[in-house]
Amino acid sequence: MKIKTLLIAPYPGLKELALTLAKEQQLLDMTVVQGDLREAIPIAKQYEKEGYDLIISRGGTAQLLRQHASLPVIEIKVSGYDILRILTLVKDYNAHLRIIGFPNICQGFISVSNLLGVQIPYTIIHDQEEVEEAVQQAKAGGAQAIIGDTITCKTAEAHGLQSILITSGRESVIEAFEQAKQTYQIIENTAKQTKIYQQLLQKTKEPIVVYDENGTIQFANSSFQKILRFIKKDSDESSIYAYFPFLHNACAQLCKKIEPIEILYTFATDDELMQFRQGYLKTDNAENQYYLRFSDEEKEDRQEYGLSVAAIQPIMTSFSQIPGNSQLMQAVIKQGKKAAAHNKPVALYGEKGTGKKTLAGIIHCESKAQDGFLLLIRILEDHREIADYLKLILVHLEMGTCFIQGVERLRLEHQNHLAQLIDQTKARIIFLFHDNPIDLLRQKKLSGQIFKQFKQNQIRLPSLKEHAEDLDEYLRKFIAQYNVKYGKQIVGVQEEALKWLYSRTWKNNLQELSRVVEQAVQFANHEYIRKEDFNDILKNTDDHSSVIDLNKPLAEIEKDIIWKVLQEEEMNQTRAAKRLGINRSTLWRKLK
Image (spheres, rainbow, N blue to C red):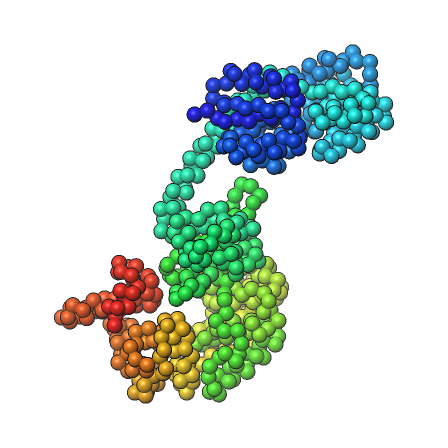
């Protein structure tokens, strides 16, 4: 198959030469047209639409086409032979000469003329807009004839000067033809390799998209396209921001700085929370390329870099949204409001599931930092490069709030270094701990410098057992929340079930209560949740229910298997249904 090649000749003689030489080319399907500088742009765009592979031109026209054409542009270079011919032609010229041209032309003339002992003054230009002024200055300086390219010669003649066009010889055009064939072969090989990679990405089940810094989607595999169609039906938007407007540019810039670490996002669809990771792609060109990769898995983040970074969407934005009238919770709210009024580091601590991230998000939303974005840094293990990554993140944050969880996993020397970075950052810092920071300090797991930063600003979140009198309010909040999610009309909890909930020990506090209420709302068939509904859920979610009783009827065994898979998938119905090879509606039906 021949290479469809367009040659745009700035002057008639080059067109005639190219047509003659094209007859000798077996691999090039050559079209030759005449056009100089800007008049060549529409010509190039027309032939681009017709499926041409390459463009060949010369001088300023070639440079201009590279800026405006999407096809590769091969330049017919001014060779030493071309220069030698012109110098031989003008060596006995009686008129005062001057060369006006782009750097590559002038430098070639200077080198060859010095060898021949021919001295011709020259003016270097970098843009065609400079030609007019250069010709006027040459004329004012006594020049009678101008040596240059097509536009230079036309301008010289318009000012009443003689002109000598630098023409391209046979060897220069043939060299351009050879370069065109080599360039096409490289492009073809690259295209084949790219196609292989794209096919591989298309086959992977993990949704992946690549986009530029303007949000324009460059590539999206079929798995990702399904997600886009689900988010915005009947949409052909080409910008990633049309689907995910919360992908702030600030996070994209941070993503570039901390590459290869990815930024984790949680995205809420109609009835599921999806996680995806944003990363930066290093490329040879100056363009910034980013990617998103979705995952059905909510497993621990990769620990090869020692930390994970997540962009957070606050669950609540105001202290008035916090349920609970107990003295303990009112004290927490009072301390939270006090913390929101200043920008000093704060420490929140309490058992798992007590609402530390929720309170931290409210403090952010009620503070002066509310317009900035919200990041969660989870330190997973001490890593030799972790201090460098933390520095890049904290220096980049000029506003907003940063949650830091797991600081006690760092060596004390790394904690001290982190304390210095926190002193310099403009962002709000909120530390999250499971254990009392004073105990961590005594155990030498927490640096004195870190502790000093939040010593006067510590808030302890009580366990659910400690403020059990608030359980009613949390139940009402969760039932209303999950009624909306599952299209139910549950109005409350029966008295017997309520007493039973009060007597239960909630190992994971509000987090566990929320999960249990969600399952009860989802599967309850009555207006009130009964004790039996909770029993069915908890007997399948408690730790001791790992053994399936094969003496039960088949339907009960099937239900136990589904509950076990749900438990392993952290109650995510989509992933559980996928593992079991059924759809979600079938899963719900079998559990009723």
